[in-house]
Length: 340
Image (tube, rainbow, N blue to C red; front, side, top):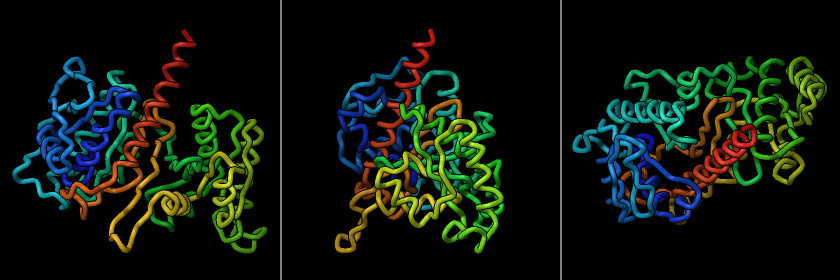
């Protein structure tokens, strides 16, 4: 359910009030049952919260929110919309528990609500975000994130690091690894021989070396190595045109060199803010972690503390994440069944 002081519990309550969710999967919330009771009251969905301690106790029926109750939040002292170690600890413990459930096969996929990096660090857990937590507790070395909005898919060479460090991380090895992760993810989605556009790092992809060396010394060799492996990759392509080409259908995925290079196009397309209404009218897009032994999909937005407790937060991104996770889980189960 994400950070209990943010909008995570509220959008979970909204999502589970949608009957189509139960057509996709058997949803289970991991977190604190009292927090979910509070969230249900805030959004006014009328859901009945069913606290459980095992999958066998879940009802999986519309109108009921099954909550694996960790009992780790004091709702009387919890301050909605505020960063706190209390909320950070609860959020971290919920993430750790859902990873355990996936690793033991009790759930087929995980979908994460938003957490606050400052809060989990205040609680003593030194992670940059969800992705790093999942990587550590699944013992995964090679991983990255894929952002998705409709048919635009973006995979990152680096994410939560300073921009100066991000430039240093543009190496042939990392770029090739990211291309390969992207190619495998597209195959997992049923897209074989998918077209992957690889962005340059520098303006105009350096114009043949005029504005930097990374394109000629690192990115181009990585693309050539990927092509030698049979991957349909092209690049480096100037990033100021690559995303428009991908949105227009020329590429099935884009490999971005750093966090904001990939995040900004996705959020320009998926997030819509109204100055007249002074609120977000649409928040779409999902985050899929590639390379893990389990399925992890997440909303592509933060805890939105300024909206917490109002019941106005959009569940669009969470609903999309649930749909993607369900599709990936179904495809994996079908593949496992085909293998016998």
